[in-house]
Length: 92
Image (cartoon, rainbow, N blue to C red; front, side, top):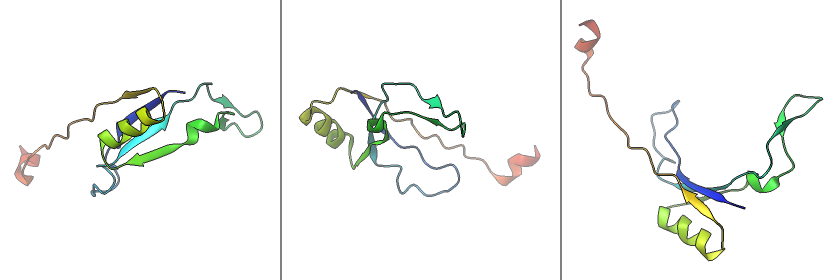
């Protein structure tokens, strides 16, 4: 089963960056999610897709995947851009 390694983005609801530096190894689902006829919730029988592993660095996540023979693809992290503006710019 393939996995993807990515860096979690900052939560939009909070200003802190506590978990933004950790790397995540997450297994991809083999089967598509199907809606439950009774509740309408989507779900599937693939429990491996629920596994999420956290690592402090990208190299640690890659080493774990290679050590356990897990095929993976790396999602490059997005660069954070700051938009510097002053309060007076709101009234231009």
